[in-house]
Image (cartoon, rainbow, N blue to C red; front, side):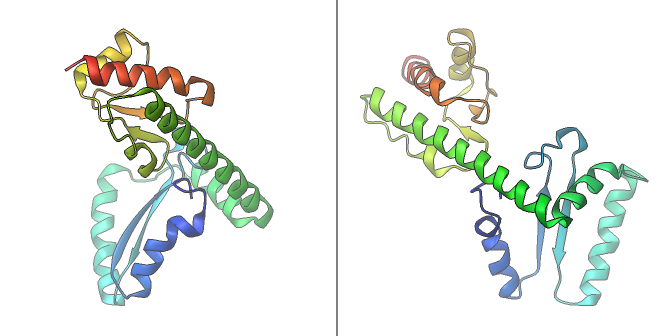
Length: 187
């Protein structure tokens, strides 16, 4: 739900695979979309074609999980269970998640608009809009990312990945200036 703001839209591909009888593994995290970062709460869901296949998969998952921990903390899982198990809390969470995803989409659009308006080189910045979620790969390399930090005081990973969750609409033009400078003036 955090990718598009819609649980149904984000689950559509998984539902399609399941409807077609495909076996699948689905990893799901609640760390970001429920604000439970320190809890690292999530789930792995497995759809198998038979009870025998499910038993074999469960056996292998237990072999992976047991060396990592013997008794995982339960409080994060209880928080998630309370929210998704209560219709009023669930609807409130969905509305908040839609609002957060919408804000990030707006920031992504404003950044794209600023890059397109300011960069006269003809570079296609549409990849900014094609990506989803809280982060964006800018296309900047390590030297360009270093320029973002050293000259523009914009902090990002060295592979050009930047968080859009902390970006306000008011700072999109500044970020566009920094990206354009770093992209065109640093090798």
